[in-house]
Amino acid sequence: TTEPRALAFPRRSGARAPRIARVACGNSHSLAVTLGGALFSWGMGKHGELGHGHRFAVYTPHLVKFFAEEDRGNGVVTRVACGAKHSAVVTSQGMAFTFGLSTSGALGYTSLDGAAAAAAGPAT
Image (cartoon, rainbow, N blue to C red; front, top):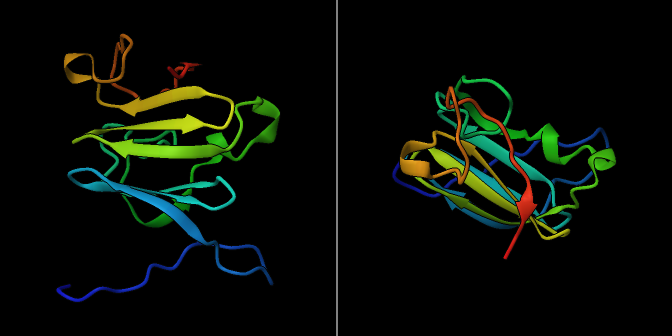
């Protein structure tokens, strides 16, 4: 489309639509973070860049469950960035996560199959 259009984000029954704080765009995927720190992604997911644990396209914003599980102790998402085929997230606990294609070491760790796998480390 050539004109701006508001995105519809999933929400719980009876709840307000999430308020978006930040957005990042890659070549064929996008990420959005809510004011509460929830992460949503959509677009091409061929290399795991959406963070959903699979390699399929998602055509509307979907919650990235990895960061929604409070028992992981990672904190909420505060910052996001997208490369061509990878994504990076920083959380309120100061942890950095990357996922997607690790061409030329883009993920900061060795990925044997390029799968969507988050590797935590302290953000500096």
